[in-house]
Length: 439
Image 1 (cartoon, rainbow, N blue to C red):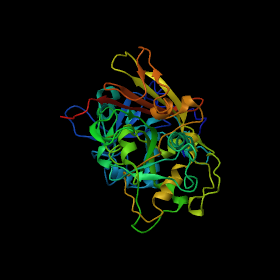
Image 2: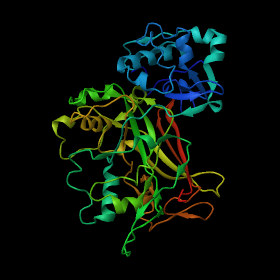
Image 3: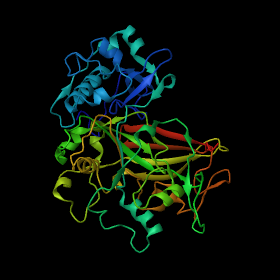
Image 4: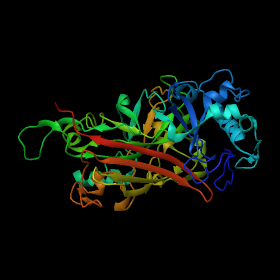
């Protein structure tokens, strides 16, 4: 780990320290400039650094990717496949290229010495540094598999109490990270509109179901992580190796049609209520950038089985918020704030469990956390909870009320880790609801 939580390191590129993307972050994303092919970059302040251009200029010579320009790709999968040592080597090289001063590691054992080649080559800077406002962000990677967990004890208890008041938390929940395999092809990047889904629903007092647009469209505030190198089919991944298999994290909005879900989820669980769209933020924050923000996870009782036992702190202090903007509003309003540190099951436990039966993981697989809900009503991560199943509607500044989403509503998720001198941000995860296509 290069940076500590008290790091004062700065880049020679101006005005980045108050951004989501200081030198302590350096998240990866896929982008495109007008008239050019997609490639891989990192965000630094209001800029995107073109890593494919840096590689062509020889700036990654001496690293494990020197002979393979994995950044001259449409998506991050090839770089994800390179593994932990390659990711760290690239990160160290980027810090050297972007820092004007020597940068000590968090424990003081090593030092990153500045590499002045990018700073001193005007023609390379012109080719490699782009304004973020002028680039198009794309899906960061090809998602071959998508898993959605259910790892917030507060969320699981809240939802359970609505439908099973006498038994809100099922007995297996504290023993096993519950999840399901979702629809990878409908995972989209922030900014892509979401079409209101149609489906089969049944009112409580109706004799038979009907088919039509969902009336109870919801959001789920989540985090997600992408995996790097996979495992051979039939070979589990020990929990001690899981952190080195996690490339980085993104914000996730797992849009949910609650009325469709209610009718279809028994006995096999989520299906069409979830598969119509999942939105992720475009910048993937490396796990190394989040290391200074590791905190104790909630106490787990009973103790997990040995394959899920963690001896280190793997809670993550990531402040999260949901903002909602109706079609009649000029600006969004924040409707909830919470923190990822509340999650009962950690990311390493989620990954260890996902691979415990020998399923083979691949670079770019997405594992979402499940709704992140905190202990207070203003920290719930879904409208289902915030409006308590429609009984406590939210009043917007325009006087409109919401229990679930209306057409034209735009939802923006944000997340960040705050230190004294810098902020590790995730940017935005945004989507706007379009009317159903029920023609």
